[in-house]
Length: 420
Image (cartoon, rainbow, N blue to C red; front, side, top):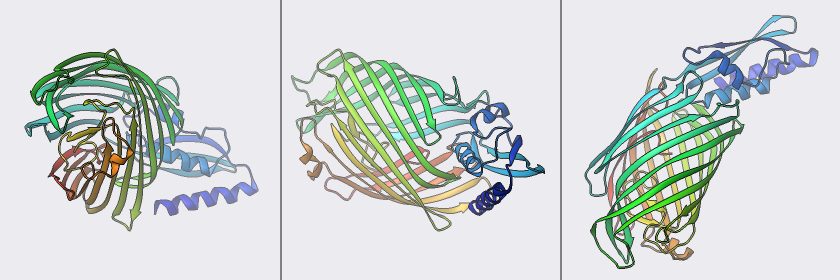
């Protein structure tokens, strides 16, 4: 219905345009309660005193719908007098002060959780401010602020600080050991929006990695303790060509992340790492949504037990377990069909059927490792999504993955937000 409405407006404006020049003499923003009207007017392309352009109207609405503090958006064109027109942008705001809780199992199957609070529209200007506390055998916390429109409608800044401590398995000689791992550091990113479909980020971080042996196998070449100062340069390119309509998505997006990590210790040497996530979404009928993601990752092929890519429940393959292996390259494919079971004014219950699969290159290995049966993991499964339509990212998910490849596990995975 919304697409038909857009089509009729586009047709109306286009036909009128042959006879006379239609000028926008007034722009109004309707529905903005927390968000500053002046801020929204800076983000839209259409300006008072310019020619009425239907393609800009549609583009502005698509842009607004992608903002985390906007649940939905539309426009209305009214003829004032002669060739004078008023444009009203109607927005439906999200509730943006979001507490979150994430429950999961730790590396030794103990109870673990992460709780936090994020405001996605701080000061009514699209600023994200948040923090978290995590208990996963050890205590961790982090804070972040993201101001994408700090300097202009296209240029912004993000600053992140974290003090993260976990129990991590380290793999070598077909065995493993558990280490207490700490990563403490600060990151600064410059944010630039080329247009509402293309964004880039570039930044620098300095941090310290600390490994301390807890239990398990030992090897002379694998140190029992490490404390290494590191630095990182990061470049991110994000392409987003998705049409958002509440829980339904159509289109594609791609996220490229490239990093150089410098180190002061040869036990954790410097390396390059890059990975790209490509996602595709398609509406199926009135209540269905097919979603797929492909991740390709490649890092410097160093023979080290501390390899950068991990196979993990919460990152890439649901049901596989918590950090079951590491590698220097990865291929991951996730595909699922989402079906809306209940759709009320504010609440949505969605089911999904999925298949997650992937493989990786062993540290120091070759590309033939991808076809090694010991590295291949395939996990079909089912899940549920409980959603609040008017609270940004208020999606509680639960999935059950069941491995069908040799020596596979099975298990539940909980989380906030869609898996991808």
